[in-house]
Figure 1 (cartoon, helix red, strand yellow):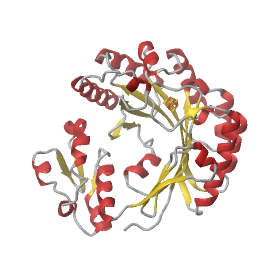
Figure 2 (cartoon, rainbow, N blue to C red):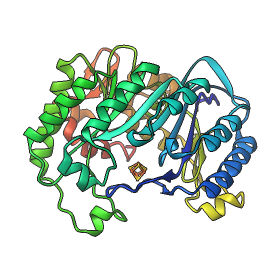
Figure 3 (cartoon, rainbow, N blue to C red):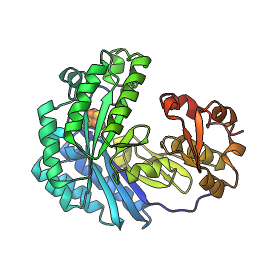
Figure 4 (tube, rainbow, N blue to C red):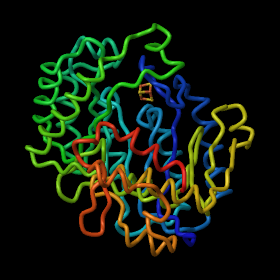
Length: 367
Ligand code: SF4
């Protein structure tokens, strides 16, 4: 069992000014008074559970953290003052294009944010309308250039796999993203989640074959631009891989504060309520489940194999006292070259990445 060592902290801000048609995140429309009340509860939650760990990665996500007014942002940052930060803290903050202003960027910089993650998804007018995003292609270019005046560590989100989308549409979006010249790109295919407008409207999914062709095209395109494909959905220029997300994929402990947030502390997976009424009454936690050694080993593989480099087999032995082969039935997958062993690492063969969900299912069960 790993010893307690919490280096990462996630904070959820559940407010948005605009609701996108595909979104099943924990979010609600922005309301200044409710936001103020929520941030007071958030501060209390942090004070209750934070145990003076020195934090190396801090991530404020949502929802849309940038939807907060200036006063609410200051309230949020003030509530973080009790958190001990390492000297080389990676401090990420999610913003929406429509919220980006010089004033916002200066404020974020003032409070030591040093990584900005921008939800763009697409710049194709037809699909922007389909996703109900609230920006245009011109907005995106101007706002990203403005952000680059103040920050160099920037991620942009790219989405594909919309019904009716062609490979040519993806290529055009990619050429635009190339022009932004930012050091990190996260890519996602559209998933039609229940309780979203797209799902309720019975939107059709894109054919799997076309989606897989798009995925491999995107990988090739971004790798040719010098991005390192370091996780299924993530690409970074040298030195810009997200340290915070690596905490998740390395199956390490992290705090999760805020509505609907999930944390993993001392082998407990802690999931917060999605009810703002409960949350504001101080009932933060919805479930707290102990993850025994078997669950931990499964997660180690399911999360670790998301990394393109894979799982370090020696570290697995050091952590659990058994080899991966002793714990999981992987012999046939290695023989069929679905999984590959290179040096100390076990990883998914790149040509099977698209089937990763089916492959990872094999690690749910221990021998
Ligand atoms: S996708 Fe982001 S901006 Fe859109 S509704 Fe969901 S949380 Fe809000």
